[in-house]
Amino acid sequence: MNAQVYLAIDLGAESGRVMVGRWTGKRMLMEEIHRFPNGPVALGDTLRWDILRLWEEIQQGLIRAARQYGRRIVSVGADTWGVDYVLLSRRGELLGLPYAYRDNRTRGVMERVFRKIPRPKLFARTGLQFLPFNTLFQLIAHQQTHPELLATAHRLLFMPDFVHWALCGSEVAEYTIASTSQCLDPKRRTWATNLLKELGLPTRLLPEIVPPGTQLGPLRPSVAERTGLEGVHVVAPPAHDTASAVAAVPARAGRSVNWAYISSGTWSLMGVEMPQPVLTERALAINITNEGGVDGTVRLLKNITGLWLVQQCRKAFEARGRSFTYPELVQKATEAVPLRSLVNPDDPRFLNPPDMPRAIQEFCHETGQPVPRTEGELIRCALESLALRYRQVLGWLEELVGQRLEVVHIVGGGSQNRLLNQLTADACQRPVITGPVEATAMGNALTQMRARGELKSLADMREVVRKSVDLGEYQPRKSDLWEEAFARFEELTRRSGGT
Image 1 (cartoon, helix red, strand yellow):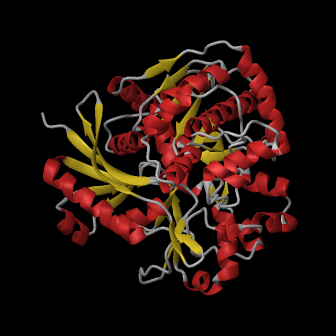
Image 2 (cartoon, helix red, strand yellow):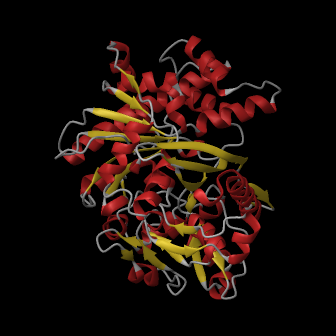
């Protein structure tokens, strides 16, 4: 019997790809059919996404999939990073290139909003971690700099919703991606229209919200003809890439929350799966977020600056004429002295510095630590700091859920970093289970398959994941060095902004 095939379009901040998910009846086998680079493009004094090039690359991936799998392909769906959006006119024209979230136009906007709506009230109404690039703050910046575009716009579509529009013409917002915007009421799971009106933002351009697994319709005839995908439908997966990744965490169902996840990539998203949002004063104090998941679950999580530190160091090394693969950098870090220098990965200076190694060195100098000089010392500093940040956030999550979290699941591309996996187990003193690497694409494809009726529940999806991939396991090694380092790290984070 020929396996059914589901296509997962997965766009990340560093690269995009079209993935094939082949369902054998017992296992979901993932295959990369097309990969392409991504990254913000400097245009004038702004950072934008080249959405037209991304769309062209997506079509090339669909063409390759059609040539290889033909009529076995059932459906396609897209997931991307959160918060960023596209504006369309009533006739479907792009109103400018979409801004990238690291653009500096939102600088100071969040603080101005707090003067109108105090931070506790805004958290109670949106449940989201305060980050300067959340969609809410981007829209206010857009209103201030280009009010004519918002006045002209007919529809706001988040990045994966735009891909779905390009595929089939749908104009909806999938729930999990909408939940990253700080424009959503976390209890009602509808747009926080009263809040937006208070801030002077138009609400008419907000689309209908639909749950993951929604059938969006057949491909546009022109797309079907161009790609060769006749008869293929578009299904909304969990369109926020983290939501798709969490859907593919191979945890077993239980009566209580006893595991944490880290979706590891450019960002590290660390959290737990909850039935309802947590909107307590303590959740506000530690700047936690409540985002949407599959089957109405809530991803109670913390956005942590992840392997961005390593990616940007590598980019800086290349600019200096020293090129390394990621495994080579990890090997250099393995050989460096442990727990010598630490940084707070979420210090604002690391959001988008012109030179990441220099930013790390300046942080260490300012805090009276040995300054890392070699590539290995810099990467070791970044990875150990990230592991200690995981330990800090794990403690906060346990405080919020009221019980010990027994295991940490690491999924996504970052789960291939063996050194970081072991450092995480050592820092957190918890077993770490790694895989799947392709969690995002797998969660995307499994949701499409479930929409077709092949699976009944989120638990079924996770059972398929366990049968489909080889998982890794890292046991914690006891060392007093980690206790001393964590005390230093907590002091560093307190001095540099705490949460």
